[in-house]
Length: 331
Image 1 (cartoon, one colour):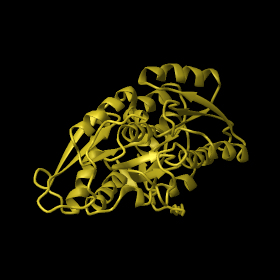
Image 2 (cartoon, rainbow, N blue to C red):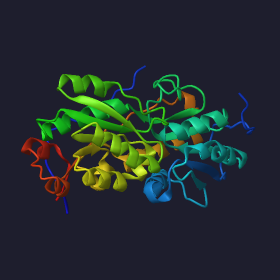
Image 3 (spheres, one colour):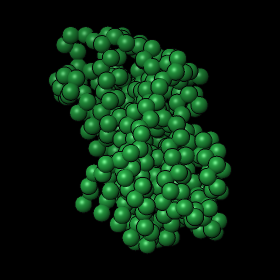
């Protein structure tokens, strides 16, 4: 059973600072009476893992007056965790003459951007939008792309701090990332690790078949805990990754769904909320805004989760100060 806990963790609100392409008709930015808009969803994973997030986006459309089947049609395509399929799926959506593409994650966003310069692209959520070249800046993205972005390393730095608070004697932590995702870059967590006396060991996995090998490397490196990036593949495979952490007796921290699936600690973005908010970008574009003029946003709300069931399995006692920071404690 999950129970909300009062917390003293101050929430940080981020402030926004100031080739051949598939042929597509030029988009007229402006809502037209009687038009049925067609939105193509370029999903990098599967309906099993991200279907609920697409449903949250649909909720956001309904909240803004769109009626599916009457004023808007949402066509969803899934790459089933195979990033190599994304360019072909993006081309399929563009050739079907969708009015807008909604996608998520740097691989999905890059595939969409490489396919069209005319169809508006809204990123529900992706890491490092500027660093990966998706947009020119957060304040003025430019081109045909906008949406919500975050900095992976800042979240992982916070997870390191949570792990250290939960395990004061912690000395060596593995960071599991997907090096095929250009957004999975390490910066802030390295400095944080040094400041709190933790050595960071990198482990990588590009496919689910790579997980066992990655955990073999983590074990051989004598790591005492694991941090899991919120790569779309890892979100889709959260339960399996949490199970591997438990099998190897490794305390872990990651995105909130990872803790829900059995990881020890979760700190991260409220994914349903940002997907629902993506509908606001779509609405503004359909009403005449140019994507490149709509500032990229960064999430304002972050959730902390502590899984006490997992703590008991690992025979760990979570300090009260960590429990007090959690919105959700899984007992």
